[in-house]
Length: 423
Ligand SMILES: [Zn+2]
Image (cartoon, rainbow, N blue to C red):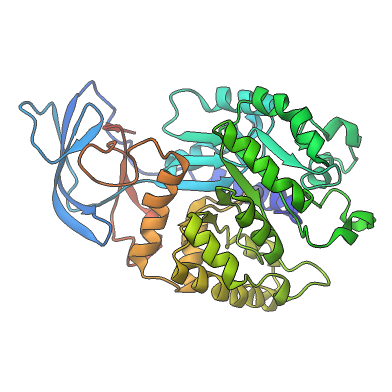
């Protein structure tokens, strides 16, 4: 997101006032005991296509269908719909202590067990981890090395204090994000990248095909890396075993990012149409889509962020939705892997599920797999998560209703389980 940071915070404030007023009336779930083996009986379990009745066991936090010799505890799911939990592939709400304290519960209550915070700094990340707590039923990746140009996003956003005053640019540079304007900067500042111990690297492109933006004061602090820097940056990161997520705005940014070999693309271009630009600036070309498919470049679409940018302007949103449909249809047909993230402070990834569901571009089971199977495995490729399958971590949530019929089934989460423990 570039434009609507301030607006988002206002929305957050309003929502929070409303949420605080309505305490959760549900009964407390059973406390977690020392049980090593648990039988979860009479559930309907997501198998990638639909929900299938059966019983699964958790043994030392891993799923199995084989009944262990001793069952310490039986949990009756009473026909509930058990699915792997949600993953938030793109947000910023847990990337400092303030956010971690305020938004932690929304993840926990909403059945989101995995997340990626996509532009932080090392200090904020350390404080966020502490605020989140080591025992949070939530695994978070931090892009604690966030790289952009000296006149780039997120400068404009980061320097604005709550009272409207502006922090000096020098206070933000190489603090809130790392500045790289030349190839030399990549080598010179790489020790800082390493020192940040990032789980991911974030690299920012914003209409990189329009160098004339750089001389225009209106765009100061909203630009991004020069396009020719991305490939060497990705190469440097990969040499260190680090993955790169690119923030992109335009179709040209998308092409630059895919050709540079980034691992993930943080937005579907066109969630906002910048002033003076039109659909053609955001319509992805087929060759770039084909290359992304071949390389397996993941797309974290954040399509629903368009709702925040459009605000009350229904015409503007419909224009963006038409553009998104066209791009997404071709991306999905080509087999570009779709991951889910909301990039919203006023919502969880659930808003993105609902937004994509309403676009009706894919069967519900495919969307659900993207949400609960692909996104977690993209974030944590070493772990056996995202499926109800033999040997996978016993992480799941149980819903009253079938979420493939309507994602609003997420309104009623009966039970949440993490490595076999109920919470
Ligand atoms: Zn973002």
